[in-house]
Image (cartoon, rainbow, N blue to C red; front, side):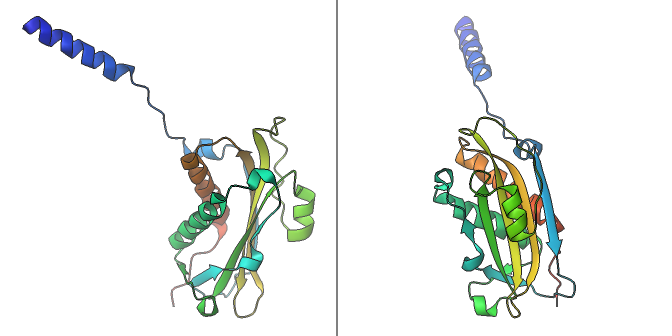
Length: 192
């Protein structure tokens, strides 16, 4: 009986130790190569709420960006980061203090030079990979406008290597890390 218990215990321990685990990617690995830049006109702005500005949200046409979940992933990531900065989302745009929009583009659809010309920001990340089927340089631009005056308050851009075969949970984590990094310089809401 004791020998049988010992054999079962050894067998269970062998099975447990042979299980493979998948480590969660570290933040450093999520954005191992990224470049960020921003411009700000938020001096004196005291708003605390925002809403989406659809006219300032663009996806530059590219079949690789055809995934319909991308918009939800990005808006969730931006909302999380804005909430941590003290801003509240307001679905009634006419009551919001600012409008937030974003642009998503791959290098093959919108070059760094075109980004600088159109949006006035260029993080300047060099080319990363020669395998354009698996990787490509991607750019995320976030901009905030004063909802009453229509003036640009803040614009920032981040460029990083986009991995097309990433699992959905890794994509969400990479998007959140990119947005957090990009909005790091965005000022916190001023409590009235």
